[in-house]
Structures are given as structure tokens and as C-alpha cells.
Image 1 (spheres, rainbow, N blue to C red):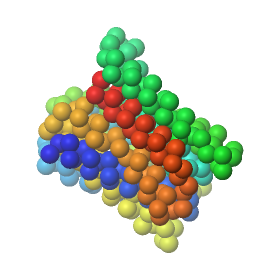
Image 2: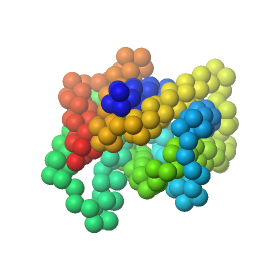
Image 3: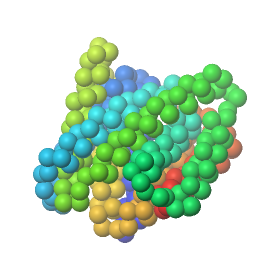
Length: 275
């Protein structure tokens, strides 16, 4: 059951990113994230009330910092996928989101297994396949930059969230969504963008928030009831969902070697999680 929840998390997060990317093509990306985060607040709050947990100030602070980083990363990620290619941006973000906590542990004195380092090599080589598409021209460089920037923000956000204690349950996620919403709302206003997306495309933000909230709930329950490494592996498959859905429904180009690269990036990320 926990692994199934991790797989469902990948599916829903991939759907969320697809809607977010589609919305960012038609509206300011920070407006999209503001709406999606706003939808996620009541969903995660409800789960926290049901699952339980203590309101620990330190963990709520870490959750809030995580929200500032991840919400900003989502805005960058959505914009990058809208302007370049989901097949480039999404795998880079996912790999960096897995690498950053690993490197943080190394700096803290941890000694990852050989499997984790093999995963790093596999993932980095695979990214070479995903980023090669001669038809995209200069957009490849832009896609790599968007992927790197959003990936670092995601990785730092995940690292802060990983420092929270089990006793706090999922309340840090509520703080994450709440402060993330406030952060991107401020960024949207700084760009003179509306906090609410235009009516014609508002459903993109709503569906992104709903799917993202459900995906986060699946991931939280999965990690609390099963093995963290196994659930993390199952939850790391979302780049494939984004790339396939974007190719089918949004006309994104996906070459065969990019498909191999996405599979390699997922495999590398899985090895890092298992290591």
C-alpha cells in the first residue's frame, strides 16, 4: 500500500505540473502557483487534523522556509516548462531535488552508499540525453537554466522539510503551503500580475492545486506508513508523467532519446533514494 501511495503521488504531482505548465503559458506563472498553493492549504490542513501531530515551532518554521523555496521553485519551473520543454526542465529539477539533500547529508558527515553515488552518475549522464534536442535551438540553454534554478530551490526546500520531526506529523506541510502561497502572491504583485488567474484559464490553477494537494497527501501518508526509501522511489516518477502528458495534450516535442534520458533520470533518482 505505501508504494502504491508513492506511485499515486507521482501521478498526481505529474498531473499538477502539467496543469501548472499549461496555465503558465496563458498567465503569469506566480499567479498560477498562488492559486494552486491556496487550494493546497485546506487539503493539507484537513489531513493534518485527521492524522494528528504536535504544533512544534521549530518544525513549523522549517515548513515555512520550505514553502518559500518550493513555491518560488514552482513558479520558475512552470515558466521554464511553458517557454522551453517539459522534457528538459522537469528531469533536471527532479534530479537536483534528490541530489541537494544527499549533498547536505554529506556535508553533515554522512557517508552515502555506493548505490547512491552510482545513482548520481546515472542521473547526470541521463540529463545529457534529455537536454539534447536540435529543434529547440537556444531554448535548450534556457530550459537547462530554468531546470537548474528550480531544482536547487526544490532541493533546498526538501532539505528543510526533512529536518522536521515525526512528532509534528504533517503540520509543517500546512505551514509550507500557507507561506508558499503568501510568498508567490507577493512575487505576483511585484510583477503587477493578478493573484487570481483570468477566468478563462482559472481551472488550470485550480486543477494544479487539487492534484498537487492530493499528491502531497499520498506522499505524506505513504512515508508515514511505509519505508521512506521505497516510497521516495515510487514518488520520483513524475517527470515521465509530465513529459508524456505534455507531448500528448500540449504538443510538446519528445524525441526517443529524450524518453531514454527521462527513464535514466528516474532510475538515477531512485538509486539515490534507495542509497
